[in-house]
Length: 406
Image (cartoon, rainbow, N blue to C red):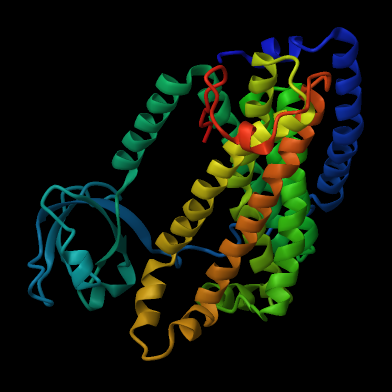
């Protein structure tokens, strides 16, 4: 099946298509208006705390340098020799001690590094210290390869998805972060910010159509479930968010609720996978309806849920694996302590990751049948026979082979 959005939509009779559009508009426009009102009401005004902390002390400077002699990773006292390439000391060679043996093991001749120049240390002779690796070139190449792969496989739709991603990240940078710093409610910020991100991501990547609007409604249902569960889960499990990073934030913003901030992070973290499954389910339902225009709503729902169950099975462990990978160093440290596995999973920061995974997965799983039901209601004319049993529907047929849209 290779129908485009417009082709699939045009399978509906003109009168029915107008009714469906009016119904979707009646449901989505209030959400859009509420999102815009929330953005205007919460939008940060005045001076933002972002960028208010100086990175360097007066007189200090970060300069680029090239490694001309690598340190010995087996000798903790070994130093590297670097040639400064900017900052008024071009060509100056200096010995610099790596901050840690693990850093020394990654330093090779020819590497570009950043050094911290502290002129006030002229009396001690330690004018330069290691600051960071220079990563501009490799990250730029990875970005180019990423864009090339997206364009080669998904073409203009892939480019539109990248634009939607950039728009969503702009919401995070320009709205969510400064609003949280100014002390607004993390719950309201998560709701409004996530809604804005979803409108941008869905409509920029997939266009405005009946199909994408159906997916957007399912996404909002999953988002509402995720917010409610995140609020209950962080409160019931007494998750404080008082990890090392959280405590540093609390020092800068004493009035902030670290638990509510954790809840906000849980909601945002699950948006991508949530949008993925709702778009897949809506597309699957419209494709099946286009291939079998007379299919009943019940049969369309059951057939589409066959794809949805496969998607649930894959996406649930995708979320779990993603969080395990992120928290792997933390899990390694926690596993050193002699205590039961259950106690380890329920301790501090690991419990936060467990709750994050469970909440996101529940919202994702429940969004699939909701999206499927909405799509089946809108895509099917409801005139087909409904005498096919669940067992018959669940078996791949020769006429309509099973497809995997995940």
